Amino acid sequence: MTAPPTDGRRLADLAALLADDTRAAICLALLDGRAWTAGELARCAGVAASTASEHLTRLVHGGLLVEERQGRHRYLRLAGPAVAQLIEDLAGHVPPVPRPARSLRAAAADAAVAHARTCYDHLAGRLGVRVRDALLTRGLLDNADGLALTPAGRDWLADIGVEPLRGGRRPLVRDCLDWTERRPHLAGALGAALCRRFAELGWTARGSGRSIRVTPAGVAALAEVLGIGAADLAPPRRDDGGGGRA
Amino acid sequence: MTAPPTDGRRLADLAALLADDTRAAICLALLDGRAWTAGELARCAGVAASTASEHLTRLVHGGLLVEERQGRHRYLRLAGPAVAQLIEDLAGHVPPVPRPARSLRAAAADAAVAHARTCYDHLAGRLGVRVRDALLTRGLLDNADGLALTPAGRDWLADIGVEPLRGGRRPLVRDCLDWTERRPHLAGALGAALCRRFAELGWTARGSGRSIRVTPAGVAALAEVLGIGAADLAPPRRDDGGGGRA
DNA sequence: GGCACGCGTCGGCGTCCGGCGAACCGTCGC
DNA sequence: GCGACGGTTCGCCGGACGCCGACGCGTGCC
Image 1: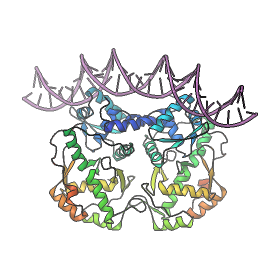
Image 2: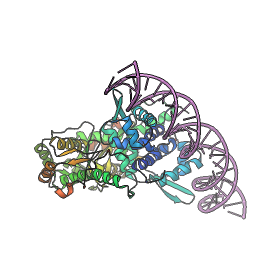
Image 3: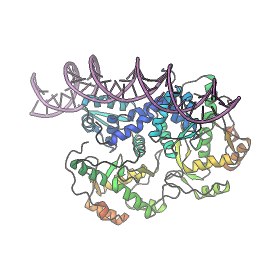
């Protein structure tokens, strides 16, 4: 029956977009906020290019992804922060199950990713969690009545050069359950602004895959302005050269 | 391949629970926060009892629903506020499409539901949106740096007899996109507390289906303490007697 | 111009999954 | 005890869907 599209049908259609292993893997990969080519996503998901192509058109038509064509490449990224938030939320609700051991290479890549990464447009991993903790303990954020920026926090932001934020529909501060730390890190407009500013200041730099590095300058700076110990920021043994697939 | 359950696989499994028309309809029905019997849900979703039974066990095993058996009945409800929030979020992300006209009976029921209802444990519909608006314009909530309760708001809550709230993991105040009004209403721990308190005070009463009524006392009280006009609270023409199915 | 490459389309295949009715089980009411 | 009733299990069917390989098209490089 194609009669009137009922509410359940619409919800099911949306969920169905994420209810496939391949599409889910694609969306998780795109959570780093960057644009990937169709071929990269196909290899990342471990399927043939033709298969991925069909999935990608479905995701674009469903409004989760947007595409940008350049020459013979088709770049894809999440349609916006709202979509990223949706996927993060969904991923945060998966039942907590111990993560099984992996191969050596994969473990090394995992370590880099667990250490610090971006989650769409904000900081995640151990770094993201530590930053949120530091903001709370220093009274720059307050969690009594829901997460909120304090006046001291506003001053602190001005100190490090973050432009005053005034949100549209996007909440300014928002917890995002971190899937490696199993604790919240900082999302929302503020999370995005901090992530951007840290990179501008040279405190963080892109690593391989979706991991990022804290630069030496960043270690010093984060210790100074947030009191985050260098031990918490030391990168994993090595930076994992390779292509960060799977 | 049943190798190590990858991240994408886990996310896909969760999404698959909601990626079916019937299961989605069931979850939406349960968004009213009450416990339904298996038979009721089957009729509501328009499938055979046997079909619904299988869906329900899947949803329970997946952690979205919890069951409570009483005699020959099997009562089901959402597993908790986190699940309700997840479904609300998902429902809020469905692309905005004009709702088609429906039958007369259905339209009447829709009107009652659009007027005022509960969304899991908080107020929704026109009433829920008006309450949120009123709290904002009276300075009891502040939306400058994300939604937050103001000191004045805390006093106001004490006035109407809401116990001071202090959240665990649940955010105190949170926007929840209303799918009839297409505007946010108030969710989170505060939304739930207000919904409960309004009912305790006799300002609201259960209507049919998931709709609720604003009592005459409620109309007067809401005008007094929140300045919400009676016109905004007048119930639709009649209260729709029937069983509120489909 | 020729070739490699990235991507899209198409047809076919296998699998999964949702639907139902029938039969069965336990509970409740008389 | 008996029948009515709610719920569950089982077997079966049909459709949907994910996957691939092959082919065709356009782009970019040499």
